[in-house]
Length: 633
Image (cartoon, rainbow, N blue to C red; front, side):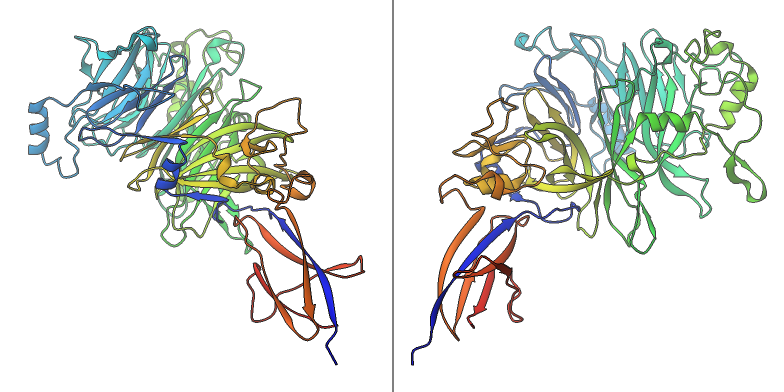
């Protein structure tokens, strides 16, 4: 008697599961070779013996990017960084180079002129500084009125000392920003690197610095970045915020590195008798970036590495994105935290920190606070009657000098990190942020540089009340020889990302839509807000009133709903296959996916039945892409 024969309809469903941790595999990984073959990137080749392409300045008005490296200043075309670059060779003087070597400073190639400051002075000139083989020097650089002028040279006779503007040691981290012709710099001031300060020099304002050799103000700081904010309609309230990390002495367990945000008033003129030539408005607060584990233990990411400032509709309240890492050797991780300047401002308006009692523990100051409130700007909204900081009373200056730290800490939006990277062999080093319009809303996309020389593109997906998830869309190797990423810059005008490291410079497009696959389902499952299915290919999405021929679902990544109606070749979202089986036998099923973000679910439907049930894997085969299904009636 012949065994009975029957048929089964097997429905294969592909879906993209939510991914909340950036340490999971990316949707697409591109090696350096793959990236170059995609024709979506350019690597800058510099024929001279140089390195350390750390300083990047984008000028989208002139369509140029200015780069500082070892002994060279570069002016590059934003559209094509290899198109006729303008080059200034600026080495340290030969005698200074020899003196540096004789002093024993040449073991790690320190005895060169490493560019550490490039800032726009006006429409036609830049101000640039370098380490000068442990003798910092600065100069004016003429760049012309327009990029078409094709001019780039150091102004004759403009060379001057860079003390208080550029570090001596190229390994030291510094910060510099030019505001109305005045340079503000966070820098080590002396040769030995023992005097760190927030300096104001140049221009029409009086030179001002932080208190010298006072650990309450700055204690071995490493400067990261800054932002300038108009706090109100009064120009007198304009402030500079500086972000850094430093060694803290307020903890119960001894010194620890903590992240800080400090602020000063731009119109600060110093004190009259006390704090002469010193900031009278300097205050600082701790930045907290931490996560509570399932065991209730809090893991803190205390090492601020890089920041990105994203403007909002309220110009007084931009968002601060920060990349943080851990310091310990037991746990190695990274996190991205986002801070609202409104929350920062609330901390600076709160209680001051004060040491008192047994063991001089840090507590909130409860005594009488002098008027005007320490840290306020003279002539501003809160201090209308006092036109200059030189008119502040001695009680105000004395309080500022001894109480620069705020008692409360600044916590991130929703009091949790936006993204956490854990259990990974690498850490994040740098960040750039883009806001991308899509068919179903506007999304935040993070570009994150790593210490293994790659850049990840991570889309932040809203997940409910004050919760988000991170989807790693892409990871690319951006240099032929892997090198930790130093800086990321985005040109919204050019839709390009610029990446620098010690090894070089790479320019790449913000999207590579064709890399997701050649079907509607591939494009939809990618959930990349830059990309949409246009009926023929996965291509860049641009907002358009005609959406019928465009398929994009960033929020859900649902090809079932988006990709119906296209031919079988491009309709991989739902695939139906009729399989004939013999009772008592078995059949081997296989499904190939294109991404680690896709999951496979096997559904079985008997002939003549409308009911479908999920088929689980057999005990000896747990690979979801393959299934051995026994046929039994």
